[in-house]
Length: 196
Image 1 (cartoon, rainbow, N blue to C red):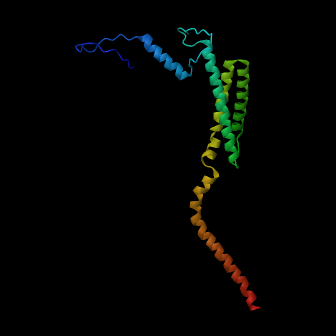
Image 2 (spheres, helix red, strand yellow; image 1 turned 90 degrees about the vertical axis):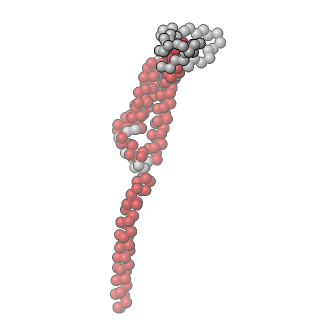
Image 3 (spheres, one colour; image 1 turned 90 degrees about the horizontal axis):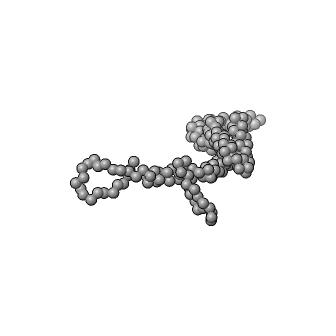
């Protein structure tokens, strides 16, 4: 903890020096920073509104409701972005097999997001937040499923870029041999026609 104290007038003070810390001021700054980390900001109040201090509780009911609402909306937006990215990925990859577990997670994410929006519309913030959290978890599980990761990191064009340098040196002599064999066969087929 860093606490800046007022310097004393004389330099003859013996060390260590006893300092009385104003904890009310220190904890006021700490709680303000903690509220910002949680995303609880004290915005401008509507005209005529009275704001009561939360006292020892730290959070008022309306601040908790606002926090739940914003986290629910954030989770639903994250689900939408994640599932859109997954759909775009699956559109780009032609030879993909989607496992039943991945499809189940996607269906669960969509259903939970719909439930979260319905609960939010009804004003049930606790259940809306829980549903949005379940939707976010399911969408992340679907996106980062191990069966899809190798397709994400090794698409077909990269596979060709890796394997062509390995097989090309072997393919050149084989192709030249095949070309020579075809040429020799044509030459043999032409020889009997010359004798007639």
